[in-house]
Amino acid sequence: MELVKVVGANLRAARAERGLSLSETARRAEIGKGTLSELEAGRRNPTLETLYALATVLDVPLGRLLVAEPESEAAVVVNRVSGADLSGQVVDVQLMDRVVAGGQRLEVYRLHVRAGSRYVSAAHRPRVVEQLLVHTGTLVTGPESAPETLGPGDYIRFDGGVDHVYQAPAEDVTATLVMRYADPS
Image (cartoon, rainbow, N blue to C red; front, side, top):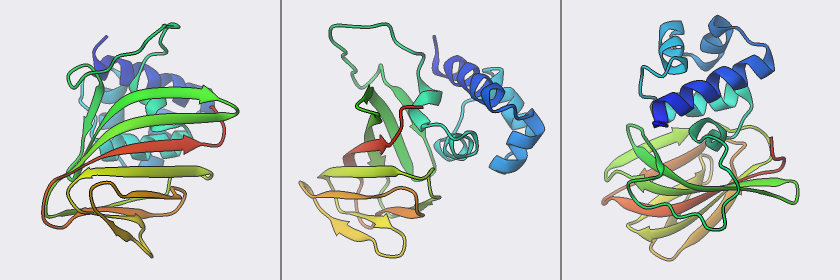
């Protein structure tokens, strides 16, 4: 199933689980009601920023909105063209895998940050930990109040429950991002 249809179905389901109206969900996410309606109908491509806002309002991990629940598989292969891609104005992500184990959910993303750009991500739900391993470029990231500068091979772990920054001062950055949620919802 194509991504816009999967996202639409998952948004509707998450909104229904929380008993929120279309209008209330759109208001809380600070997006237009028409935009949310088109997203839920699978007629509009979502941006990364919009889906992060909706995931926060619906109190679900971003990955829950991106993929249909897979059947059990012996091996999972995700290549550059088969993952769930989301583009934003500064950051692009591709969901590579989701794992639920030991009371935690892990979502593994391929991350690309555009050169000369800066993005401040609003706090995710409580008890979300972000872990990044930089592959190429220089990345300024971490809590907005105290970001760190990382280069290829550098790793950082920080609380995603606070506003945090992704900045590529001079060149494109590629990294692996792991989002760790304390509960598997």
